[in-house]
Amino acid sequence: MASPLFDRSALKIKNLCERHHDLDLSVVLDLESFVPSKVREEMSSVARNMLFARERGSSIILMMGGHVIRAGVQKFIMDLMSRGLINCLVMNGAGVIHDFEFAMIGATTESVARYIKTGEFGLWKETAQLNDIINQAYIKDTSAGMGESVAEAIETGDFEYKNNSILAAAWREKVPVTVHVGVGYDIIHEHPNCDGAALGALSYNDFLKFVAVVQNLEGGVLMNFGSAVMAPEVYLKALSMARNVAHQKDNEIRSFSTLICDLYDLPADYREESPKEMPGYYFRPWKTMLVRTVSEGGEGYYVQGDHRQTIPELWVEVNRMEKEFLKK
Figure 1 (spheres, rainbow, N blue to C red):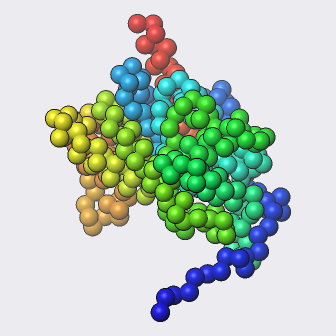
Figure 2: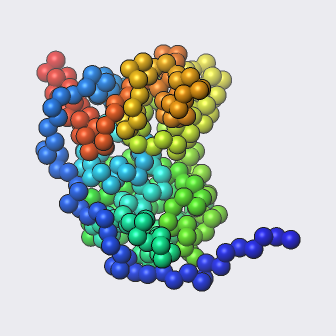
C-alpha cells in the first residue's frame, strides 16, 4: 500500500506584506564603503589569478551560499561581473529566494523561531511566484535552466528593486547562473504550485551548464563563499565529468586556483587533508576544494571571515592589482 501524500491544498498561505522581515536594503554596502585594514596574502594571490584568468579567457566561478545575498555585498559581485572577473555564478535555492525577495519588496528573511511555532514559516504567497516562473520555463523549454529563467524574469519584470538583484545583473551581463536545489530544502517547496518535475529538470539542466563552465577551468579560478555542502559536492562531480572528457582528448584540467571563504577555523597547514578522526575532516570544502582536486598543479587558498569583509576585501585587491597591471 502506497504511503499517503500530504494535501497541500489544506495550507493557509499569507501575503508577504504580513511577514516581519529581518533584513532590508539598508544592509547593502556601497562600493566605496569598505576600506580593509590589511589585505591577506591569500586574497592577493587569488586577485592576481583572477586577472590572469580573465586575460586567458578561463572560467572564473563564484559559488555561494544564501548568506552571501543576506550579507549585502551585491554591488561588489555585480561590479566584478561587469568587468569580466566573474563569468559564472553558482548558488543554492536559498540564494535565489533572497535575491528574488530583495528585488520584489526590498526586504528578505524571516524569523524561523517566530514563524515555525504557528506553522507559518515559508508560507508566503508572493515568494511562491518563483514556482510559477520555474513551471512556465519548463513548459516553454525543457532544456532551460533555473538560474537563467529567474534572472530573466527579474530583469524583464516589474520588480521595483531589481537594481539590487545579482541575478538580474547576471542576465544583463550574460553571465550564466546555475542553481542547485535539494528537494525540500527551500520554502517554495512547501507551496501547492511547486512542481517537482519542473524543479528537478531546471536544476539538473543548470548542473550540466555548470559542468560545461568547469570544462574551461584550466588556468581559471573557482571561489566558494559560505557553502559547506552544495558547492563542494556539485563542484566535485562536475570536475570529474569535465576531466573525464578532457582526458579522452589528452587535455588536462589541473592548473587552477580555488578560494574558500568561511567562518570555519582551519589550521595554518590547511593544504594537508585533516585526519579522519578530527572534526575538520567533515568540513567538505577543506578536503574537496583545498586539497584533493588541486593536488596536481593547482592552488588552494582559505580566508576566514564574514562575507561583509571577505568579498569587499577581494574586490579592493583586484582593483589595486588591475591598476598595477595597467601601469606595466
